Length: 221
Image (cartoon, rainbow, N blue to C red; front, side):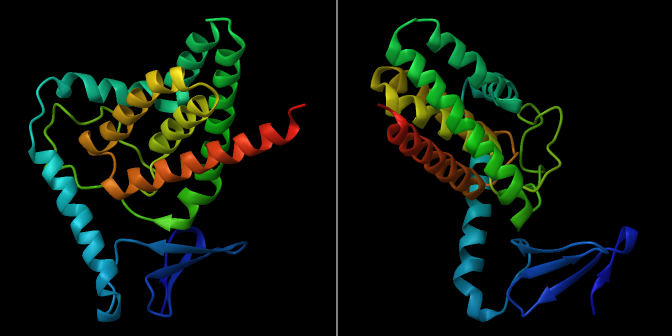
């Protein structure tokens, strides 16, 4: 039997593979549930998720001097891509053709990655945010995200922007990549994401940047 929720929504487990079917009067949408423990023939998947949780807890338990006041602020600054819009403006302000192309490529890559995350990624995989119990209060974000945890949108945007910039300018890429890496790390450090959420988001963002690069190269004279 399915589970009936608000407004006639019904969820049914399909075929024992950890998938949920969300049924509303108008739509039928499949979701992958990363929280459900599956039968023994999915032991590898269960072990990977368990290792992911242990790594999250290890990061939460470790004290990194200087990071407590820095990484939460950096993570918040990347909300809605604001950090990357400001960075693109700074890069473009150098007024060189390479810099302007790098800034444009970074923003185009970020746009594609964000659109993909919000229309496909977040709606395809069901995973609650990590438990905040092991995360020190000083690290936690003031406003906790409410969307599904997988994949990390912040990490996708960071990787997309940094890769897009680096593909056009190695010099600017070398300056931006450490910042993007710090944003990705901050998502685990603050308890917003599991490590695998961040890795998946970064992979998607990098792929988006290469897709944009291919389109730009094809249309250049």
